[in-house]
Figure 1: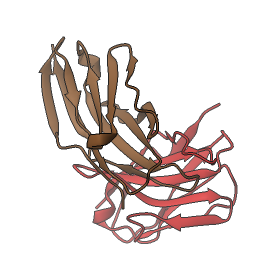
Figure 2: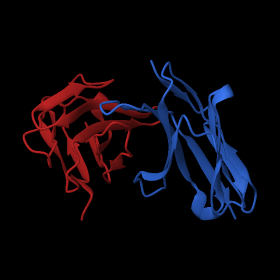
Figure 3: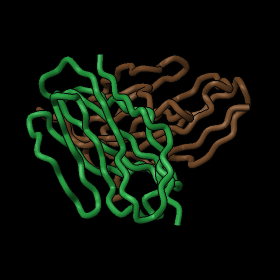
Figure 4: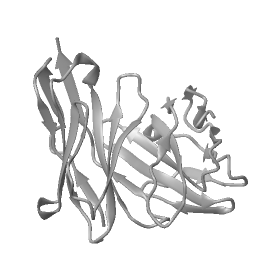
Length: 114
Length: 115
């Protein structure tokens, strides 16, 4: 049971390049989400998904795309990277139920956009 | 809209001191959950505790204790006899008690424990 995994751990991009941050979980959690962490800003929600084929925007969705074709995977796409997207990205997952279950986070991906 | 405020940006203490991290929240919901996460220098986010809004009992886990007061919308975290390994950024977070609800984080408090 690996929990939530993220790849890559670190990435450097040039402005305008595209890339996909991978996230996978093996806990059969319906709910998955992406956050970005910036100094002094805490964690802010980018996108989330409540099941395969269902996604929604969070607080800071601009510049990012997501899709959810399987329960296990929830990739985050940057179509045209900008320096403002330099950040640490965390993926998280949890069970869906009548009440809020605890979210478990991946180890993070550190992204630098030059 | 939900909001979590951690007014202390950074706290420095000497080992063995007690330290309290403050968390104040805002929500219109009558049922919600509160969380604390720890982020050590290695960067991962470690879940510490989840609290239901309808359970105001304080909780103690070893050197950690949490004081939940609905009347003041606060969920404070105390570390007793702090240790160097407690040095980390601590985040307080809030969520509605609904299946599809999202998690709102405070900006975090950096705790530095020196020997």
